[in-house]
Picture 1 (cartoon, rainbow, N blue to C red):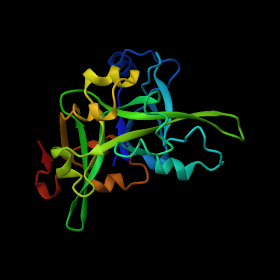
Picture 2 (spheres, rainbow, N blue to C red):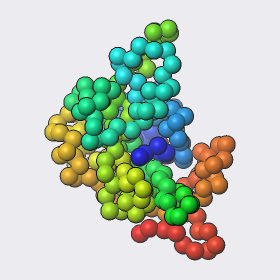
Picture 3 (spheres, helix red, strand yellow):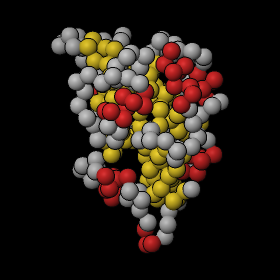
Length: 233
């Protein structure tokens, strides 16, 4: 699954990359963020502007005041079941978005150890993760909150070596498919056939990720325990 992500692109970088304008959106430098903290993210939609959304989708039909439980359960959306899930099925055509990522984190299991890796775009500055978004009106404050979920699919060969238990990965769009995705063209399965598989990865320091504030550059830097190189490609 994809529960830990990064976004270190500048606003200008994102504006140029996706040909979108950015109005009154603060710069973000997210080296490491856990979805379980429901961070705010810069997200690309069919709108001309970059949007700010919270990670963890709250469906428009949700009636309760406490959104934390449903948001925890919608950080990711499995492509195999989104047509069946009430939270996602109405968004498949007209609720598509792209979550820009400069790299994400997954854990490899070796015996009883869990070893974290940082997975980054090998030949680009950003991953375009396919997502779904929705708007929810808070019944108490009347505030409209926009939230998103990251689509996941079966891991490719590269990711299967890292995320070697659940064997999942985010749906990463190729640059040729980004506009079509946002326009609502095609079905999900079409995009899985042309995943952007140009990935690099290296081991990172688990001690940093366990800190109270892991959102620092060091969270992404290569880590070589006992001088033994732990990199993939």
